[in-house]
Amino acid sequence: MLMCQPSSELLFLWRLKNQEKNCTSSLDTEMCAHLICAWAEEGADAMGPDGFFHSNAFPPKKLVDTLGAGDTFNAAVIFALDNGKSIQEALTFGCQIAGKKCGFQGYDGIV
Picture 1 (cartoon, rainbow, N blue to C red):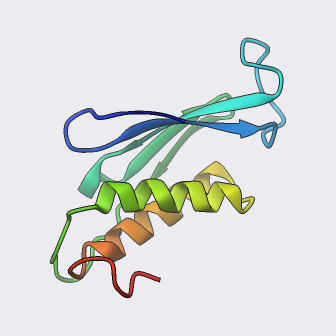
Picture 2: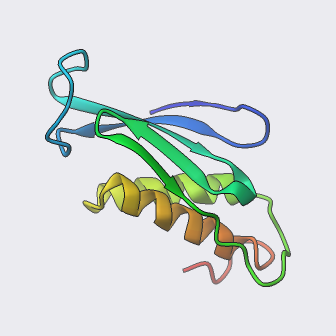
């Protein structure tokens, strides 16, 4: 996984072991790459050999604490992918969990 930080959100490259059937020959034959960008209140986007994906944000009713929301998003996306979810499902799950985290202080009770 490659991580860098444009503005306040993390951008990372997630490599999946041949879960997508239409990997292009320009990629490693055993891996498919997806570029995933979180855009805070604008949701998140992903792009890979199988297309472009978007998830809307899931803001809490009351914004309490945004510290760590990007890390929460990353962890949730990785968790979902590791459990066999599609890139679209992982993106949506990441936005849902990051939004939930913004609704309370700290991390206690996030799951």
